[in-house]
Amino acid sequence: MTTLTKHPDPELSATGRSRKSRKSQKRGKPGAGFRGIGDLKIALLFIFPAMIGFVLFYLVPTIRGIYLSFTEYSILGDPEWIGVKNYQQIAKDPLFWNALGVTSEYVVINIVLQTVLALGLAILMHRVAKSTLIRGALLLPYLMANVIAALLWFWMLDYQIGIVNQFIEWVGLPRVAFFGSEQWAIPTQALINTWRHMGYTALLLFAGLQAIPNTVYEAASIDGSKAVSTFWRITLPLLRPVLALVLVVTVIGSFQVFDTVAVTTQGGPINATRVLQYYIYQRAFNEQDFGYGSALAVILFLILAIVAFIQMKFLRGNQSDLD
Amino acid sequence: MTTISSPKAGARRRPFNWRRTSAWVLLALAIAVSVLPFYWVLRTAFSTNGSLAANSASILPADFNLGAFKRVFGLQTASEAIAEGGSGASINFFQYLLNSLLFSSITTAGAVFFSSMAAYAFARLRWKGRDGVFTLFLGTMLVPPIFTALPNFLLVKNLGLLNSMLGLVLPYLFMTPFAIFFMRQFFLNMSREVEEAAMLDGAKHWRIFFQIVMPNAAAPIATLALLTFMGQWNEYFWPLLVGTSEESRVLTVGLGVFKSQSPQGAPDWSGLMAATLISALPVLILFSIFGKKIVNSIGFSGTK
Image (cartoon, rainbow over all chains, first blue to last red; front, side, top):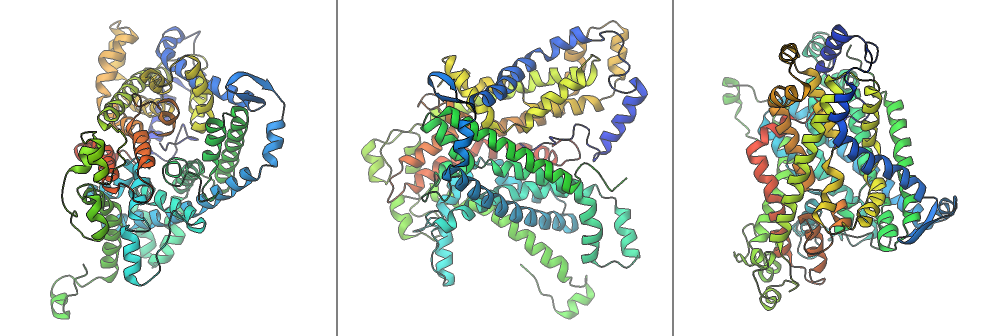
């Protein structure tokens, strides 16, 4: 689920600010005013179970995953150290480059569509209807599992008797093999995800819009600002921090597309939807090549880190213009 | 949808506003796109495969019947199922439903409880290294799940826990980074007065946590539990790796299997949609009861 990964202290929220001031009154800067060991003993007891989970299922696997990427390991027998051989092989692996290509295509289509539609919806809701019922209806697809979204559209977009193709034919256009053609397979996957995520993203942006003080708009309208220029000059710049967070989270999420592909096209037709995570899954679990799979996972991890870093830098997501 | 009022009426009442009307039309369109596919699932689930092909665009179920649901719950014999367009392979959604319920409930209970404890230590106790450890915990949210899933799979395999409920729940049982973050945020904003009074009375941290802090946190705990439960209900990748046997399969994985068993040329659409509907039902029920809570929990201003 989406979270504020990079912002333990979100400056966005009013609560965040009041908390800070309270904290500084009571105990000064964190880490500064601790006398002796403080509550260390009791704190260790409180975090003990979470610590087990953290070490066993996050910390050790992260290290082990990096180690495995330098080995040849097929589950049977022990991992055998082979240095950077896996990485050299990846550099020459056409299937990897194909996976990177189709994943990028998916991310671009998905993010552009989803963000534009969600921004439009958020503004519409902000303007004309703030009711919980409307927001609830738009959120409904997001609450469904990816697998459900995938099957639902697999049926609706069926070439033979799917309702969408019925409609397309009724309009007078030729039927589309949404899942069956190489050209359409990735856009279709992206559309499914856009359908599932659009409302959720709209709600996040809507919450961001709500946080922009009304006085700003009033000042703009007194100055005679038109709706369009209000949007470009006021709404969008003030929404930027929220938009940046939404983009970072959704881009990272879309790079890890797997469920819808696994349920519908399974990488096909040919290699059209063999996205990165599906390729990793196939190498590691179908071909028992854990070393190579781990190396691919490390690459995916690095790509995500770089993309997130560039986005934060470019969009200055950690600064607000509201103060 | 757009009611075009005559100029006279428009002058008397509110003047007709094109911008407002088109905003409503667009919003209505988005809602239709979001909600109508669910009706189509319902309509297909109550149809028979035979008449679906002939009436592919009919708004009402084609040849209304319950065969698809019987097939999904394993209540049809193989020959009956094949006659109605099913694959005839044994499929038992009762088992998957039960597994999904267990998997989601156990992980939610464990993660919410242990994460709350940790969040209390991060928010309210003073100890050296606290902020460093917290940052480390939060950092795990940046690691893509597939990256840890490979080694975690090996661990669960080495422990001999493949295809067991324990193996399924273990990685989620002790904490989720999001749950810790969420609860810490709440604890930081909670008033300290009652706690401090109790502290002066000599109450220990344990008592304060269980008797004062947790009861006061009932509302955010409920929200967190809801979000966690729905997230776990929809989980696919980890159960796909670990719970592959008929006995340990959860609904999402079962749906995938059911789809792949469906006859290639003429898929068992009504069966598939019945199964989809059953998988969606628990979340739909939760949403109809707690909709407001869920909708209001979404936004960056609070936590999620």
